[in-house]
Amino acid sequence: MINPIDITGLILAGGRGSRMGGVDKGLQNFNGMPLALHTLTRLQMGGGVGTILINANRNLSAYESFGADVWPDGLADYAGPLAGFLTGLERCETPYLVTVPCDTPLLPLDLVPRLAQALDEQDADIAMVGALETDQHGQSKVRPQPVFCMMRVGLLESLVRFTQDGGRKIDAWTALHKTVIVPFDSPADDPQAFANANTLADLRQLESPAV
Image (tube, rainbow, N blue to C red; front, top):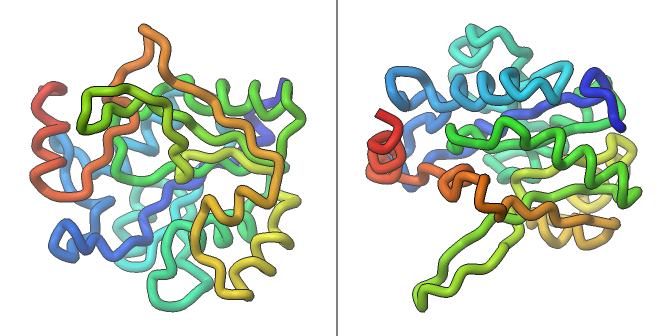
């Protein structure tokens, strides 16, 4: 098994927050605490990582107050989650990196151990969450959640090439490597675990069951 001390967690908080009116999403309150701090606390409680970094592009001192090192994108113009991946791989000092967005405050406590187990057992380059989603017809299906990834740090060179060539889509890059999808669809798994808050209305809706 992969030792947690060999895994760095990266919280992705570098977006524009466009659908939330341009506010810094990671600093919006969820049950009285900033979203990104909820995410950081969940990662710590799960005990699956040795170090936690935050990728943010504004209000850096506010994020630093959470007690983690904070790094902005190396790519210009809010280039998306893949820019955060790149920053994380560049700054990571462990063999493995786990990425999570800042706007999913209910993420599973066993997220990292399950990704690490799958990566190790399948000898994969990337382990990606598969979460149960219900479509408009009421059909449930496990769908990949590419912002929830565990990857080997040796993929840095590949990602540098991909982004230098203009690539910005996570799934287009992960498709270049051996990727295992790790389903979180058992009866014991919280169906809201990977629900994200794109808007302030989403945030209040997520908050309600937890109050």
